[in-house]
Length: 312
Image 1 (tube, helix red, strand yellow):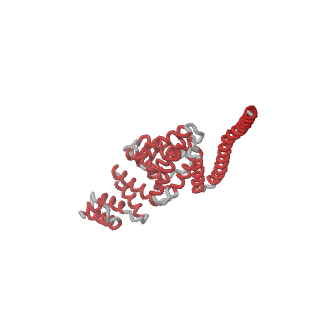
Image 2 (cartoon, one colour):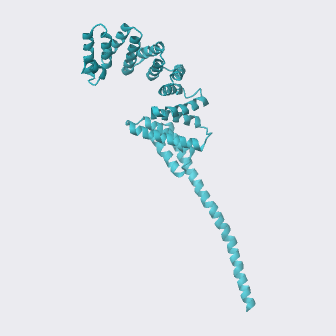
């Protein structure tokens, strides 16, 4: 009996061992295979979304790019490519916003996404473009972020000086915001070498930097160019008003009057033009000057300088 029980026990033990030798490898394989299958499926899903994302980017459908990149980030929060595309699409979405608050919200999303992408891949193949977009995003954040905008745009420009040809124009404005007018005019000079026609903003910004440097002749050249080539009335008016101030300060009162008269002839009802004209007339004919100041107030009742001159 004892032998029979020992035999049966040994048989059960052997069966148990056989089961263990079969089950344990299966459990181990399943433990490896199931997560592997999940990872493969996840990566396949990400690749499909990314392929679709690129197509929408090429078509300029930034809203869909933004949505698709968010889908990838829900699956893989530290995906470099998805963060990059989320940042790029957010920048373009920001420029399409009407309200300033919505624009700044999109700019913040752009900055958050792109800075995170840079942390993930310090030497990523697209980091120059990322820094370029970051610089422009900080540019739109305003004057208090000018130093950060300069930091990223300079890095992008140093890495790829022959591409992203609008960087010098941005840097010119940003250096002026930082009161570094010498570097500002140097950047504008570089920007103006580009083959395409310079923008009004570029010409006016360069002129203002030269004014701040105390170099009116250089400023005049840019202002005359803007006034004579621009198709935008607001830019023309701005250029001629600045020209009038420079000409008056350098003793060319007749030239200043001609610029102010040219502004008035545009029929844009600019109170500042009448006010400055009154300033010119005040030297010899106070009655004529007061007439101009009253005209300035008719157009702009809040014009403080005109009100002060008239004692109102």
